[in-house]
Amino acid sequence: MRIFIAVRATDEIVHNMVGIQQSLTVPDMLVKWVEPYNLHVTLKFIGDVNEQTKTMVENIMQGLFQKTRPFSISFQGLGVFPNLQMPRVVWVGIGDGGDKLKELAEKLNDTLAMLNVHSEQWQFSGHLT
View 1 (cartoon, rainbow, N blue to C red):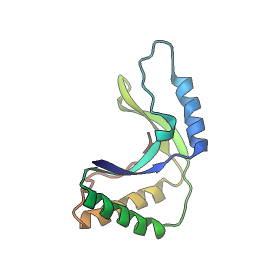
View 2: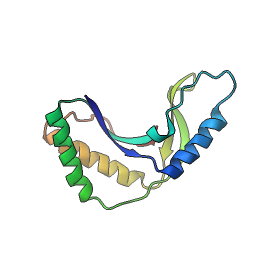
View 3: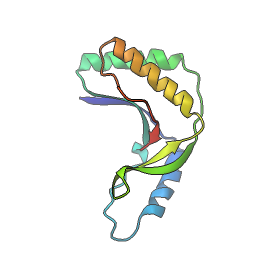
């Protein structure tokens, strides 16, 4: 099974994103929007794992997140992947709290790397998709 670790968007954020999606939609536009309640900020993509690895990842997450104090984030700016000429993904950038989110993603990546779970080689850049 393929897994990733993400922070799910709140109902308020989902509501705001639906408004943004509607404002960006024009007639005859061939866009397939993400279902609103699937919006999230990916902390770590892991990929294909077996049940044993999935359970190990869940246990690591619980331990790490129990030690993490709650914090807020704000969103700012829109962008697309891969580029404006061929947008495949619309994303929303992270403003306040982005540094704490990055720290959490890095701790998660480092902890999982020690257990030989796929490690990201690039710098975390949080965004809502």
